[in-house]
Image 1 (cartoon, rainbow, N blue to C red):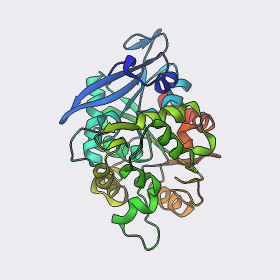
Image 2 (tube, one colour):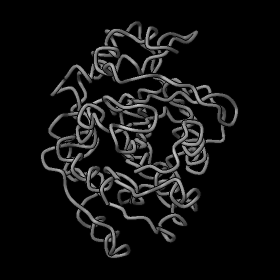
Image 3 (cartoon, rainbow, N blue to C red):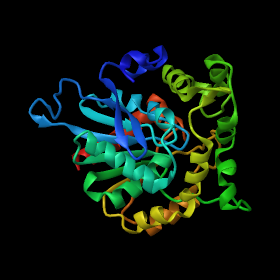
Image 4 (cartoon, rainbow, N blue to C red):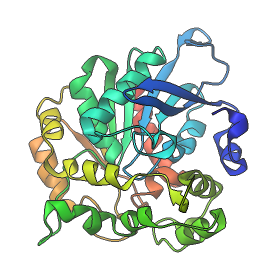
Length: 316
């Protein structure tokens, strides 16, 4: 894929610094969006080395979650892959799971010549970040976990294997749906309480990019089997628990006050925050005001609060 292959709505938000790259990984190629720094060469901006952020998206998302971060940090290289089973990496084969995702993104950094990066992970991307830091510690400078990364607690009476429906709800339902065209998919998202009420140009691009043509019609890009395999690990997966036990990089945990359906309690209610900060006292935690699980990265007021923590990680 080249920039000429982008949908007009996507091209309108990614900007001139953006280039799409396909990187060899297990079973094929991983699609990656790269935003190069303004005025930079391959490894320098002026007299300073280029700083790199590896931005990892959530469980049913894509690299189109990150244009606002790139716009807010024009002096930084942002590398954002479509994870295995998502976006334009949807045809990469199983197994999925946090170790596979961590090895994939480590391969992306190696292929792009990045020795070390600050890793910013949203939602499931935070879990991938933890496992990446454990399996490939030399690639990670520090972690910024955005409403993700700490094990999820199933609601009372919900078995871990039923977690996808209990937490993701309509986000899981839509993966089995077909749509006649992009307009119908935009309409579907327009009714979503967490994202439809404050529709932006980025929302249009994000939603348009998520559709892929199949024999059955237009479908969301995320594969159901990828979601099913991945979500169980977000509760008590061995790789996640080992990564947290071995956590040795500076880490900041940013949490949203509202959840995936703009609801309260959020994905991480007060009891969960207290639990994980007590177990990891070196973990810096801060609530990002007036956002939900999506808008913490997809609205300007969310990114405006996230960026100072990413800057601090780069400077640290």
